[in-house]
Length: 260
Length: 281
Image (cartoon, rainbow over all chains, first blue to last red; front, side):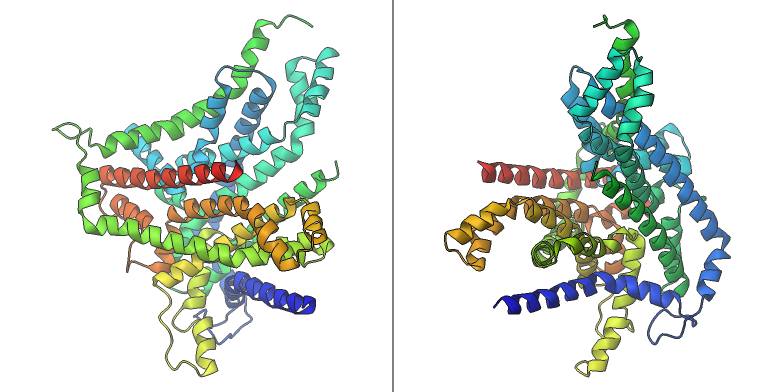
């Protein structure tokens, strides 16, 4: 009986792993195709489609745009998230619960609707679509996340350390720089990297809010119009690689925090 | 203790204002603008609810909503049914020191971007893609199946993503169970099957519900998966909304449709929250 359950479990787990990895494996394998269609039979390996991606100025500039938008928007989201989390965790403010609810509210709304709302007000304000407007949208979706992560990590023992520093004569700003920031860095980095992966992958807000200069997911979307193409496989595999690196960094940060 | 100075009293507000201002300016204000727009506030004959009545009277509009609800419901149920046993195996059958690695592997493709993930499924399900190739080789099928650009493809693409998400949430709730429950059940003579049905399953249902709710919310608002995998044969709500913005430039109608979609999500949220509250008492 027990052996049977073990065997059944193994079979089921392998089937689910197979299902989960099937599209990724197909994507990566056929990015190495040497002929023009990413369908069986496999004709590679060849790196010609990776070369084609790196020689495509539209894709490389979209890649740089994506990195810039992800870096800057997540830095702003993490900074605003940290400052507000600190304010709400340390000080008693009137209407605190309502204001905290307001900051986390965007988490419950789909990206499509957030992007559309921004498009409406930017149109009304006469602000042209650009990477800036898309970046503003990315801060909107990531700020609640950063706030929630950092706020949840602000515990009592940290308050005591800060209190000790204050009793020893440190001003609020010195407490912030010398005590709070160093204690909170795992949560801050976790929220920063999580925001970066979300911004890096985000499509619909960038699609609605950019025009000529755009981000990589939107440029990949444009590539899709040409149907199945190994070049799309190659750029998709590169995007996947970057996301996995960000995810591993995130995992390492979370792991390192464990023993402390 | 020192008396708080003026700067000390201002400090908390200095800290929280930027985040609040950002949220008001770029989240709340757009909502108000969309709500006003959906009521045609710019039209000469004043506010009307014509965009909302259009939704209920035009079959192709509410058909998009029923399509969305059907697809999302199906995706949620299939994903839970596939993910629960998988999460259980990871939590109970895999040796503890390998669990973290097993879980990490199980959610690795989670990190591929939406667009790339959907495109990858298109490759897999294409007319002469890997799945059809394999099916033909078995000799059971003589003609390739039409998989791409169907509802089936949309459901497969969604299920792929949400199996990973639900595995994560269900694994977490299985791990949070106090092991003494299981020991107590065993001491009282329950076998593994009875322990599972009477102890483990009921205690993890709230976690499953939260994951299912998350699945519902994320799936019903997603544009990419149905657009890339399902094509334009049948429209889901996000596709209909994008169509109004893109091709027709009809922002008032798009705003009304977006608010209707949000209302449905809110109703689902209230139902889920109420159910969880009842379950807890």
